[in-house]
Image 1 (cartoon, helix red, strand yellow):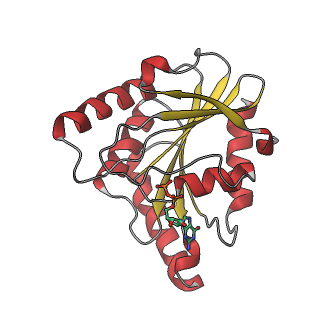
Image 2 (cartoon, protein in one colour):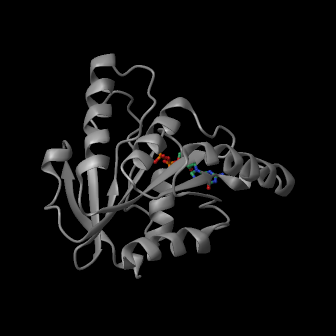
Length: 196
Ligand code: GDP
């Protein structure tokens, strides 16, 4: 698919305000600073399609992009800010798990994790919910350029091994928006999901 064609569709304050639940969409999630915006920008070959909110606790929007008829990329708010009130976190988690469970057009979830800090609690929770909802998951170990070839391969194998415990369709690849390592695997997985 021509992800370069992606254009901004909507910013939704919550799941209820997302575009109509038709066609196919793939959602992107990750801890703040995991490299989600950079991965989306790399995928779409656009420098500023996805922007980061550098302000912890700020109300975060769900940004949606469309690249073909009824084919969307969903940029979920980054999680893991220590300063966000517990009630806000709980509300977000509830609506996110509902989204994964009920959204008909959702065909897969990409979870981005910094290769130096993979599989934190919330990452695992998210993968677990997706698997429970029968959704395939792509774990992208981002910023792979930050490790040497041996170290990143070792982490990749460790995360793959750990991911067997999810007992679902969970694929793990490394990725770097800087060197484009893993770009082919990333695009192939998305192409697959958008073809179903
Ligand atoms: P987000 O909060 O998940 O959207 O993360 P960003 O995409 O904004 O990235 C967070 C920080 O990590 C920024 O300073 C990026 O420049 C940096 N970053 C993102 N991807 C990479 C990468 O592949 N390699 C390196 N070295 N830095 C990256």
